[in-house]
Length: 367
Ligand code: PHE
Image (tube, rainbow, N blue to C red; front, top):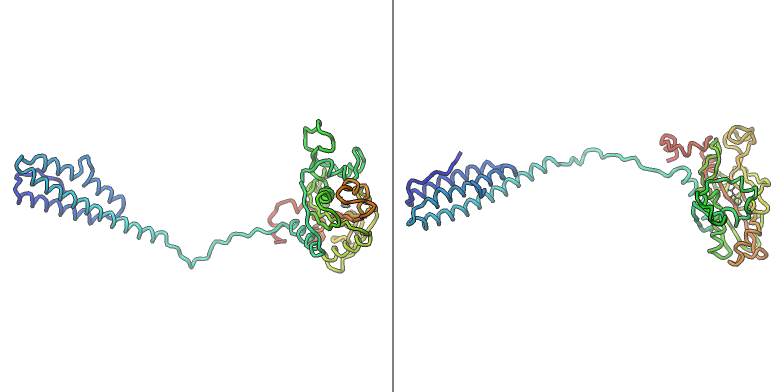
């Protein structure tokens, strides 16, 4: 490997031969540089301030030159310096150029390989059914309303004609937010037990006539079994106008059931009770598991209850009378449909708990 020699003489011929020898070594080494890392070593060997070859040239040739020759040697050394810089620079361009080629080779993409298939998500059958129910009513010209899942006692119970301590509250027990004892009862917060509170919220914001459906999640303190779960979904409906009759209610719901299940679906209205409707009814469809004789799912009745409904109780209108809902002038009907029950009936699912199990093997059947 090349090392800088001491000069015996400082004549022009002696300098020429020393410079020629150095440049030959430089060119040869530059040819060998083929990577970024090798180039750095090469650069340091020739140009490092501390003991690089150029520094040595300075020491051994320039500093050692006797007075009269200093000028001549200095010029040669300066020329040499720019020559070295030029060659080192050129070597870098070559080295990084070949690095790019290597990288390109390494990162080559074979566009003919099959791609990575990522599984597509799909709507949960409950949400899908909720959208289908809402669509049936949108086709009838209904608007869509929404309200909070954390609701006040006032909207969930009081404004729906459940007075404080009324036994009807027991049928809709739920989770109450803790630490609200200092608040008046009507302001206390709870997880809503039905979507009906949005009836009152909607009427506060929109004067009659109205037709609205309200999809949403609700909570009850129920022990899970084949048809109950403490979290479920409802689609509420409310129509208020002058001269709305029970016949309108029956016709609307009968149409909705047939739109959802096919025109052969049989429905049955039977008397029921809700504090906020009068009269009230429950609507049931033929049991989709046993088809009538009775089973675990229909609790041996042959019918599955899908929804509650009725004519809006005048006492409810009293709470929104100043918004244009004078019970002497307007009438209306309301209904609340259990979305899981509808999904179970549509798909023949025998246990509501499957819908909340999060088991992809179950869910992908409905995708
Ligand atoms: N909110 C009632 C329930 O959850 C259902 C219902 C809605 C009944 C509207 C009548 C009118 O059981």
